[in-house]
Image 1 (cartoon, rainbow, N blue to C red):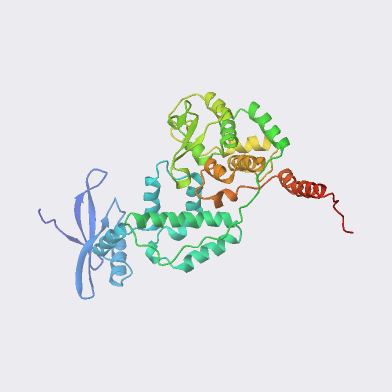
Image 2 (image 1 turned 90 degrees about the vertical axis):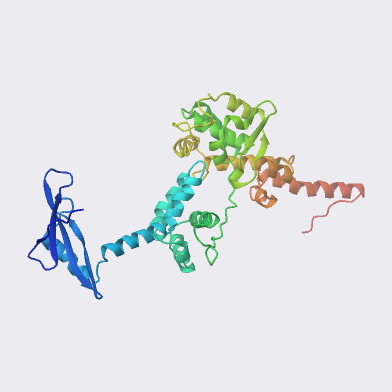
Length: 378
């Protein structure tokens, strides 16, 4: 390669050569600087006349900053960029974590990441985190967010880092991410009047996809995510079963398809491999707007969660009936342990009264058999 002629400028240590202009016809000046730092003489490019809007004065300013150590040399900058490219920051782990999810990240996790984690934790590597970082996040969030929201955010961060550890991308944290205690034994039941109002709206609403999902949640107790991911191949109409693939991260299971659920499926046109596909034919991610409109039209409680709440109603109805034992209910809800099922069982008032009245019946029969009467102590 021929050595090009160097042209001096009025600034010490700044010269230029002429080269073919980038993005335009003709030539342009390519400025270089020469400087000594820590006894080492360095010569490197400062920038191009047009492409970088470089001038002798700007080149001289860059040279001064590098002499003073306020700016790295080009070589050091390249080395630093290479080192950064090898760093598995939490943001890089998040991108890989999303890519490995079969259905992608759900909308809630994406929102939690953008609002609470990206700026504070994205540029950091897991190995640089200290417990105080997580304590600050938890304390600040609890000032105006519910413990449940804080738990979701911290659990997401834990999943991202665990993903990196499992795939050999980063070392495990030297401490445990503690999740705040959450009292979510919230009764989400509906009165007969609420149920009647809901079904009246469901039959007339233009949001028939959302209506069908609500029916399935009530008829089968399926989770929101399970309904969204449901495929036609998961339905066995001949034997009357629904395959629940990896329910909430657990082992795939089957639940019975009752007549009401079968009627719901029979009324849905097949336009995709998914029972409730998105516009692109893939799995649906969200339908909260339509669900909210149905809930409001039916006059349901403002804090009632349409799909999760109806799953809760399903569990409560079965538990209150006295006809379904705990083990069977656990299997129907695809829970991993009976403790998880217990959290869903909030017996209706009338069921509790019936149980309490049983004491009266037992005592009355016992006393009657012995010719005695129950004395009321005043």
